[in-house]
Length: 216
Ligand SMILES: Cc1cc2nc3c(=O)[nH]c(=O)nc-3n(C[C@H](O)[C@H](O)[C@H](O)COP(=O)(O)O)c2cc1C
Image (cartoon, rainbow, N blue to C red; front, side, top):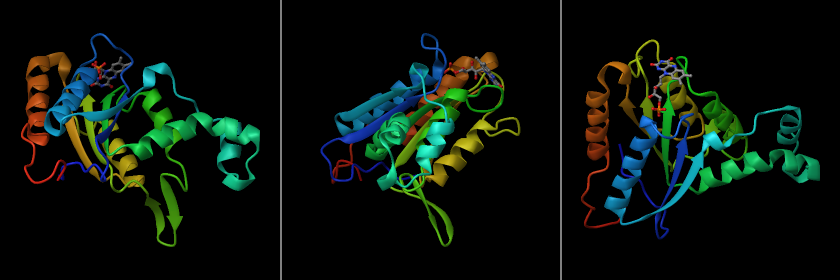
């Protein structure tokens, strides 16, 4: 996988998306922070935006659908208000060079808050577009690291519907440069699994900075 690029701006822009319903003992939150620390160590400092889904995510509803499927130049003030939350989530996603996502497996899939976030950011003409050849994602330059935590289900096993979904939906919006970091089966082997995740983070984001360019 490629190292992230900063698209010529001063600092690497990182968007952290946290989907765990808990804060204190959340393994995925600890590991997303580890990954951000590794990025900061490698690139000096990063421009970090935190999107904590525990703070709430709007749901798709009738007014949102009506507004979303109205041409942007024909939208009323009410339409704009209905899309405001979604527009904000899209804007911070479009600004990011790197996405660092922490997602637990809940009931074999992604947490409802994460699905709600996906529903808010999958927007025709903003994050994907329709072409003669079918839909095309518009975030091809964005890199994603995804920490997937679980209690018992091994990541990418037949009972893990979260990881394939995350890969697919990120690909749908054009993000194909995705590294999955498993912190799984925590009920039976927490220390081993967290250690393995940390080794993987160190492999993916090595400490030394490339000598020729900040973000090769
Ligand atoms: C509501 C809920 C549903 C869960 N469902 C599953 C599951 O289907 N499979 C599994 O392996 N672990 C499941 N777990 C365990 C979590 O994936 C595990 O505790 C993980 O560490 C949570 O991430 P966190 O530490 O970042 O909060 C569930 C936990 C909760 C709270």
